[in-house]
Length: 287
Image (cartoon, rainbow, N blue to C red; front, side):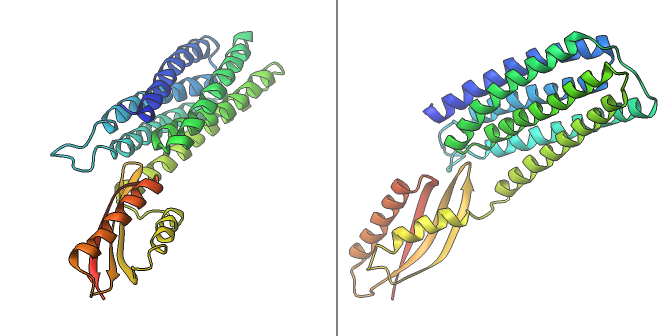
């Protein structure tokens, strides 16, 4: 297993442990005080546990090398499991929204407790650590599962801060904010779910590579004076990398050996210098 997959595995395990701890802590205090905002936050932590577990499973599958049934490896597992994360988040957002709306309509009050404040502070501290850790790894390894987790951790910090404000306002008998915060939490979870779903869907539908990566490849090709032109440039996502195919046109007077030697050299250089490329396949035509 490469360093990339090992680091992601550690991050997912930390996420599972941290979120289980927060889920039980927030759920217990939320039921004791009847705070809908805290219960909604507990629902969010339940979603986070599932997200971290899906990250662990998705990463484990994606780390498998290519085989006869999967010639391009198992990289797309990252996107399949990130889509599952988004669906789970969507369901939890609907449930949390319904519960918070009822609290707002029927003007349910909750019992203030210093534990509400303590739980909020603990949550923000844990989530900030998890956010910075996963965000750094997601950028380094370009992993959508970790990116989804990092966004979730970041959102949780903001959500819990809003929860903390509603707890403080309850000291002044202002309870309406509790239901409103619960609804806002639900909307935030829903928005994040949609964003993750769209990004996963984009890759699974074999979307083309970004222009920046394409320009890197074209810049390498321009260093080959033997190549007169190119066409049929296609890119297919393979997990977090791409397989590319293109056709180069060279002098028709070159021998088959010479022209294919140029193509082989170009393939090796692209795969060596462009980190985003998993495999390059170059066809040669005479001009």
